[in-house]
Length: 336
Image 1 (cartoon, rainbow, N blue to C red):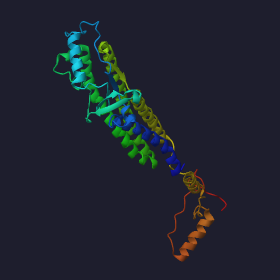
Image 2: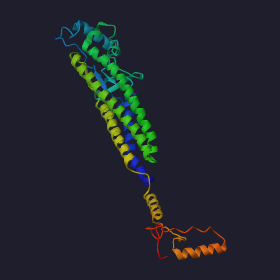
Image 3: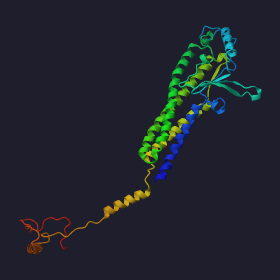
Image 4: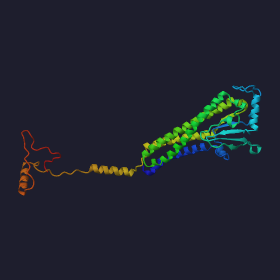
């Protein structure tokens, strides 16, 4: 498999990483443009206050010391003077609010306001609804207040998780370019991709548990006042799609480390043939000089060298008792 095959092997995890990045971007864009219906529908949590009222059968709010008449007075004041909206949606960076349309708009929800974007944002209903420093603040029982405190802390970690997940996913795309050229590049990319997957899972899981618990708390403690909470299906579908794409990308990045070599078949054949040629090259031997050819040849050669004056006569190879006629010579052939 050559460079083209290597590129084809890298293309799939690169595409999956890009898909995960797009999902994370959509999570961050939710609530950033009130004119966009698609972005406005990307919310984690929605509080429905369109039908807020007091159940007349309730004389005392559970867990509080305020009666329903006082609460009704403050809620009606908030709805009129503070312009309490029909719904509030919570996003990663901010919250948005709006009203349901009239008959001409078929009751469609119209977003009228989105708060400025803020890092580590959390939705404080007491502050947003203008109930702080009033007796109506007691509408929130202690259990719900404790839940809001936990939500405030967890939302900060969730925000950090999404930011780190986004950054590591972008880094995976950048480092992934190196994976085209070598398996070491794939290894580094796999490490970064696994980190991106871990933070994407952590952020998505935190958001799911956090806002599911918040919606349950709203429906448990505020349902008597017709205030309901719900989670955004579109947002959670998007964030868990990011998890699925990131997880699949990590698996295929790991696969590219083990397989999909960038070396071509011709290169391997060439190296193999060269290796065979080196191994199959025949050895050559020169004729062994005297005295290894026998006594007669030994005498003649010494005589010739003595006449020509070249070379130093070699001493005779003594034949001790019980020894062989000739010394050991590797690859020796007798009748050469």
